[in-house]
Amino acid sequence: MSRIDDSLIALRRIMRATELYGKELAQAAGLTAAQFRALQIVGEKGWETPTAIASRMGVSQATITTLTDKLVKAGLVSRERSERDRRQTNVTLTEAGRAALDSAPDALQQVYARRFENLDDWEQAQIIATLERVAAMLDAGDIDASPVLTTGDIKRH
Amino acid sequence: MSRIDDSLIALRRIMRATELYGKELAQAAGLTAAQFRALQIVGEKGWETPTAIASRMGVSQATITTLTDKLVKAGLVSRERSERDRRQTNVTLTEAGRAALDSAPDALQQVYARRFENLDDWEQAQIIATLERVAAMLDAGDIDASPVLTTGDIKRH
DNA sequence: CCAAATGGTTTGCCTATCTAAGTAACATGA
DNA sequence: TCATGTTACTTAGATAGGCAAACCATTTGG
Image (cartoon, rainbow over all chains, first blue to last red; front, side):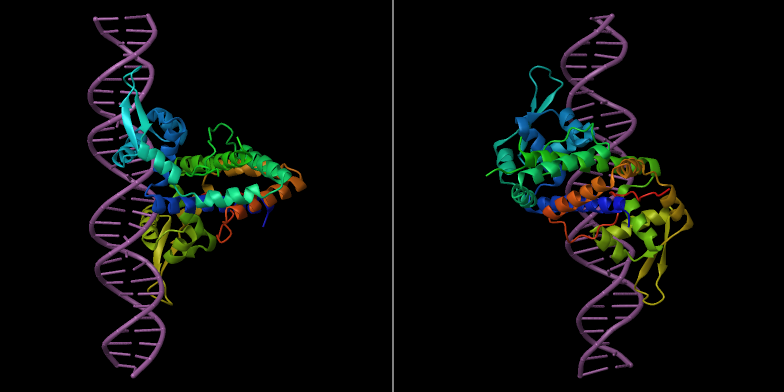
């Protein structure tokens, strides 16, 4: 077994872990991973346009339309016509949406965060450097990634 | 921005890169990521039971049934009744399936492999150690991960 | 003022996935 | 040996995510 294999296995484990977390989240929160991701993006500023969400998530506008439909039906966001440019729609976080974001379970990330915080300073730095290096090797440099693990936001205590 | 954020961003970039790769693959190879993953599992031994595939992929049997339907229709695998235990079905790789596996594009992994191989020995070891450590921190220890990045197999030259 | 360009939604269609309910074959204990 | 239970899979019926193409509405640049 080559070292490349070893590294790919580790990568695959990392992805499986977040995949499984996504499923858990969907069950626990009543929101699917994709819905939650969109909700989070909206939550950053409190509102966002469909185009921007689509671009952030790397999917088409049409997909965001249906996704937004679900979130609207769930009462987590609302659609509002932009004043400036009336072609634009602002997907706006509601009170319930904010509450959902705040209360969403994020067990996996908490576990990770807890463990990460227990590391020595230099270890943290080294892990970050390595992860960034791997990301670069995967040629993922051109991507706008927010500090989000698949779907869950970071909780600070 | 905390260090945890930094590490999560890097992780997210890694996952985005493989996600996008999966989409590319689907287009280029005419196979979806899930189909390709199943095909690869079958390809390891040349055949596999639906239950085993389901377990490896972490999905239900029913999902494998429909997935296998697609692969059968595409002529990449065939279903064969087991002699030993006639409840069992062996999903068997066809010639065309083997060819599809061999010729599947895996640009991303090639890029990664090439870059990885150019690293010094100690750097490779260090990256593997770090990735494994992160995987462990994500509590992904119990997972059967093959040396596969989402869907693509490693090509050796 | 009108022809693009832009921003979204609608329509129609895939794929992936699940649960629940079947069917067929094996296994076992009286 | 046969009724009962278990195992392996498939079928049926949902839901979700996703896309492309057609379609509106609005803005913008001549």
